[in-house]
Each structure stands twice: as C-alpha cells, then as structure tokens.
Length: 284
Image 1 (cartoon, rainbow, N blue to C red):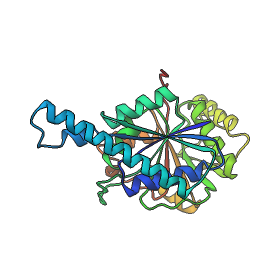
Image 2: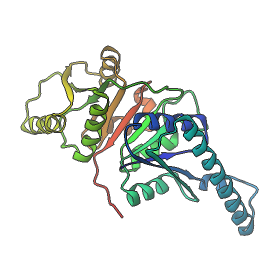
Image 3: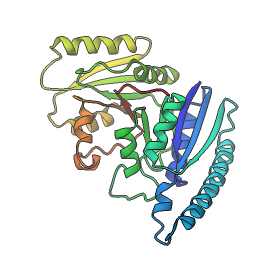
C-alpha cells in the first residue's frame, strides 16, 4: 500500500496538492495522512500572557484543526470517491518539519505531496518557507505542486543528473512505478561540455538503466553552462510534465538549495516538481 503524507494549512494551494495526489495515485491502494502542525499559530498569538491562556488556545486550535481536516476528507472524497484511498487525520502541536518527520519515520511513508506555496502565497517567491524546509530537512521524496496546477496524465519526466552519486533504489523505484503507471518517458539529462567518462559516472549510469529497464527512458546531453537554463529549455522542448531532482551532495539541486531560497538561483518550475532524498532514513 502506498503511504502518502499531505501537509495542510487549509489553503486552496494545499487542497489543490491533495487533489493532485489522489489523481496521480488513483490506480493504487493508498493510505493518505493529512497533517496539520499548529505550534506557530499558537506562539504567534501575542495576546497570550500566561500558561493557562496558552493551554486554552492550544486546545481550541486543535479542535478547530481536527474539524477542518474532517471537512477536507469529506471534500476530497466527494471530488474523488476512490474506495482504494483511506485517509487519516493528524493534528499536532509542533513544528511542521518535526511532525512530518515523525509520521514519515513511523509509517515508513513513500512520498510527501504539498503545494509550492501555502496560505501566505507570496507571488514573488516560488517556494514557500514551509515547503522549502520540508525539501531540505525531511528524508522522504517531496512532490511539490504549483498553484492552480490541474492534473493531467504525465507522459514525460525530466531527470537531470550528473551521474556522480548512486541514488537510493527505493526512490528510483518510485519514479519507475510512476513511469510504468502512465507509460511515461523518463528523460535523463546530463548537463556538461564533456561526455560521461569517469568510472563512477558510468557505473551510476548503469544503475539507472537497471532501475528503469522496464520503463521508457532516454538519455540527453546539454552543453549549456547555465544548469537552470538547460533544465528550463528541456522542460519546454521535451513537453515535460514532471521535473525530478535529487537532494544530496554533489548534485545539481544541492547547488540550488545552498542559496537562501531557490528563487535566487532562478529555478521556477511551472510543473510538478519531485525532489528525491538521497539520504538513509531511520524507521521507528
């Protein structure tokens, strides 16, 4: 059974991400965990002056959170009455990253699906602070859905890689399964002025071939020195529906995430963006 974590701040962007998740995995049995972490809501209330008021507010926010998640479950079941999808509600007083990590590790979750932006929805940024924190610090694939993006059958994936690291097989399996479900092509993009030459690169390229042998995949090379330009160019020329990158040392995405925000670098995908995590996960 596929286990999916969907954070919500009760915004339209969050609900749109949930709609995308139930569409993308509509052919699979899924357990979907809707999670709302509300510590910031409580601590940001400047009217709280003593412990008793704090405790009352925590109780009140939790009750409201549980009611809102219950309504979301009713709404998503009306939108997609899929008998193979089962929903669980989680409302916790804590930070979003900590609470998501708790669920991911406890349930051995397969993927997190969330909007690129949440309730604040600042138009001048690509990724909201919560989404960026989850991408950086939660060791689970994160599928980020742009604002107002409507689901369409994915047919072309773009997977930029420099072939420098051996990716986690579990995460490559997720990509392969999505590709098979929709008979989509995985386009592996190597951005360099030089061909693949080192033994490390060749071995890692072979690993990708082995993981994707049951799917359609193609190799591409782009000599454009600006990696972001190369990625955006291929998103357009290859009619890409899903961008896939890996968060790890020695990858293209590490360079992007090392800035204060992704927007500084200029990566602004208008399509769903799947971030794989090349880190070992501790399962509780």
